[in-house]
Image (cartoon, rainbow, N blue to C red; front, side):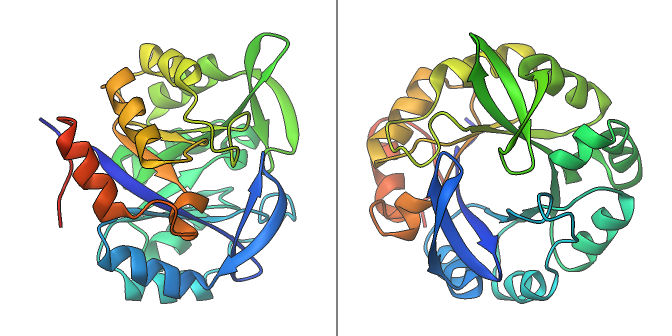
Length: 253
């Protein structure tokens, strides 16, 4: 069986890791370099680095801090925020990223996913979709969850995967930072629509939430979380022991 991946997420603003609730009320957590090194040495399978205000502030992603993080860790690194063209892909990959996450940039330029996949391979292109329920449907939000695009989320994800996205991160704004569990309904709808790896994000409040996720939706490839890892509420080695006890394959370190 393919092992399930556990992925800490570093939401970075002004060169510091921050965390909020429902994408709002951001508070300072730690240095991204120190936190990345800790996770690399303590069982994380991958790391995600989001420059969360780059798109909203209409600027390029911070590459200085990214280079430091890439030099520090020995696990795959996905980077996103302010990715608007192939030059941004090139810049981020040259800084040491293994994969590039595109969100608002693909909304502004729908051909970006296709162009990036054609040049760098679909394994490098990750679609990150910020999704919220609006009027009984799943809607895509842009600019760090601040702007309702009006687009139906499942169809948007399907289109991007058809264009070459090799992986999808489903960020549920409804459950983000609330710590009430992953958004099973939303994730189930995405899994039915695409056949690439799907990463669940938003809602983890305990180790048991990861067990519930992988048992309810065996098709989910990975669980991504931030605050429960950053504040030590869930220790990744202990989480993986719990997964193994529940018959869920995970890389034990």
